[in-house]
Image 1 (cartoon, rainbow, N blue to C red):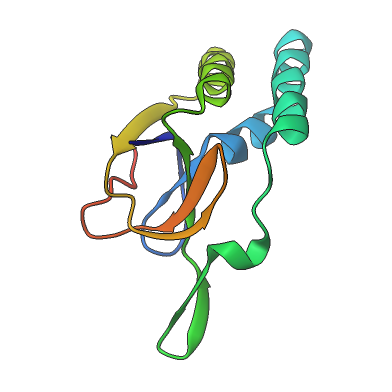
Image 2 (cartoon, rainbow, N blue to C red):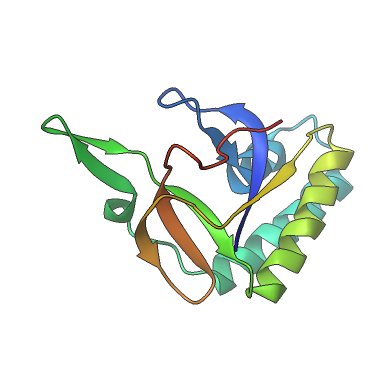
Length: 133
């Protein structure tokens, strides 16, 4: 199974919602966020920056009708226990900032474009839950 933390921020193409990290960086940069929350969010983001491999930009692209689109979305592998635990902590912090981060799970993430020991990047398929509900 694959797990995705989804923010209410929507991308322009395919109606896919951004993941937790886009929201976390936005909240961390927002000067209206209280300092104690910005510090806690930064701590979690720093941990992910040091611990979670970053897929190369090319791993997000799909060729369609002779054009390349960044349609790949990230999912945690369900056996990435520490990553998921820390993502739940980040979810709680973002909740204190007023962001409703939800989780989606699927066995059918779509076409897998990248894989490592913690995550995958996949092009969503017809059955893939890509939006926040």
